[in-house]
Each structure stands twice: as structure tokens, then as C-alpha cells.
Picture: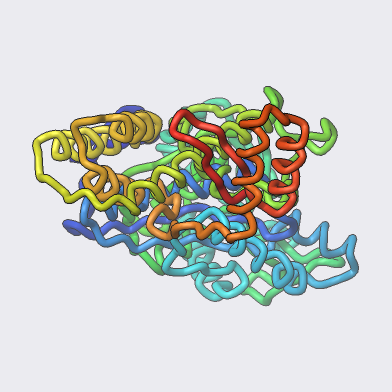
Length: 451
């Protein structure tokens, strides 16, 4: 029985989908005007783990992840570069999808872009105007009158009473938690893209896109909506106001918000020189799956602090796990069915179904590796089963064949060590490392590992 923390009710609840064993899941995607950063990466991994837990519980999942390709930030960046927003989106959307692939994130069923859904957006804006929630300004902009929606603030706790009568905000993003009428449609300004509407030339506001695309692909009421914690207000609050006013029914049953990421104890910022893009992980020769492993060590709702030291520790742990998999896979011992294996499976399910307690499930994985009551075959089978949720590609790990030349050098090194010729032995060790392999001296003898 899966329990999830629902931001809307502020408590953990048993998850029940509208249609049994079928989950409609919408997650906010990127504004594609630059490379994705580590904060994005953490959110995408958390959404992926949630999706994997649904699948592990034998649900079918229909997942929609939108692409924001018209936005204040898009327009500003495109104008700086002297290109169109379409050219900008065509440059960065493939990079976003590559980041997802590097982090082993299961692809969404659909990646709808805002610019592909303009007719549907205009239709919803018109509906909100007709129902008295939207009003038109002289410049052709359309605003949502938040005072007309009596439940405004129910997700974030922002109080409608704090609203200043007639206050409007045109920018796509605003952090100050003051209630204000927000833009559904923005009248055209110079150097901006536009589409024709009943109110004149213009473009969509930011919030309307998700209301439209969630409805188009998942229906008027959807099972679950995910996003980073900083989208709770105003973005998600405004989505609720738009959707429930336009459709006349509850918009989302479960709201899933992922915690934010700090870098070395500080908010990520270019001015602090701690802004890290996802591709930099590979640039520094880290396996992107090490970053995924690191994200698994913190509960999805908690604030997480990224450090390079922490990433190195995660990579060491992942390397060790991969080595364990190779050893277990090579084992010839036969599987013997026993209660211990079943106990591990039940504990794992209990942890992941308790609001995705992945850190505890990860600790359980290391416990079973050390458990002498399990055969190697049972351990291997359990680890591959757990990895359906962890997503560390353990089933793809192959036995490493050590070249004869490396074996020969390792043997020479061992002979030199036996003769106490430590300096020459160390020179051979360095030579082996330059060739892409590492020597480890253990109680059971020398082991050779591929770097």
C-alpha cells in the first residue's frame, strides 16, 4: 500500500488513482534557454523514482512532461543571441533529453511544447474570460482575477486577504508571496514573438500552459502533479485557480513536491560561482549515475547539500556496488529459496511505499550484501529487483576481461613486492593506472579493476 505526502492536504495519504492501476502523472519540465543545472537533475531523478515505484507496484503510468519554449527568459536570451526562440529551443531541448538519458530517467510518454498548443491555450483563456475570471487590458493582455477564486492559496497557504485590489503582475516568475492578478495572455511588445488571438497579437503567460497540457493529455482531474518545491507558489497555485475555474472540477488529487538543492551549503547562483550544470559532472570525469546515486541518499522532500566530496563518495559506493554485482554474477552457487530473501523483499517494499523512503531502502541493499544467510544467486536476484527502483543499471554490468598485458604487469609487481622492491613495484602500479586499470591489495590477494 503506497503512501505519499500530499502537499495539498499536508499529510501522508494512501495513494488511490482515479482508474485502478492506471496513474496519470504530470511533471513540470524545463524552460529551454540554457543547459540544465544540478537542481533540475535532482528534481528529474526524484520524479523518476516516483514513477519507478508506481511501476514496481504494478501500475501503468502515463507521464507527461512539458517543454516551456516561450517565456520571458526564452525571449530575453534569444534577443541577446540574435536568434528566434524556436532556434533557442531547438538547441537546448536535445541537451535536456540527453541529461535525462545520462541519469537513466525513464522517458515520459509525451513532451508537449507550449508553442504546439497555442489554439488550446487561447480556448482556455477565452473560457476563463467568459466565466468572469479573466479580464482584458487595453494592451491586449488578459489577467486572471484571483479575488474571484475563493479557494486561492489552498496549496501554498498564501492568504487571499493580503491581495491589493487591482494589483497585477506581468512577469512570468515572481518570488514575493503577495497575491496578485497574473497574466493569462500577454499583449504583444516589440522584439517578442506573437500569435493572433481574439484580444489581438500576443503570447501565453507562463502558468496557463500546464493547465492546458495536463487537461489535454490526462483529463480535467489528474492523479498526480509533480514539481520542485519552489514552484508551489505562484506557479502551481495559479494552475489550480485556472484549471478549476475553467473545468469546474478538482484539478489534482495528489501534489508531489521535491526538495531543493544547495551547493556547498549555499543557494546555487552564478554570482557565487557555484552554479553547476549537469554536463559538468561528465566534464570532470564522473559517471552521471554517481550523481543519481548521490540523489538517492537523501529523502526527496528534504533540502539536500551537494558537495564534490559527497559526489566522490557516491562514486566510490557505486563502484563498489558494481564490483559486487560482477562477483555475484560470476558465482556458480545455486539459489536456495529461504525466508531471508522474502524478508528483504518485504522490507524493501515497505520502505519505498512509505513516502519513498529511498535512503532506508539503499541501506537495506548494503545490509543484504553483507548477509551471510543469503546465497550469492539470491543476492544478485534481489539487487536487480531493487534496481528497478534505484535505476543504477545494475543489470547491464558485464564481467571485465583483464588484458593479458595487465595481468603480466600485475604479476611482475607482486614479485617485486615479495622482494621488498617497493619503489619499482609502485612504478608498475602507476603504469597500470595509466593504462586504465587499478590494483587493489586485499586479504584475499591482488585484484585488478578497470577504472
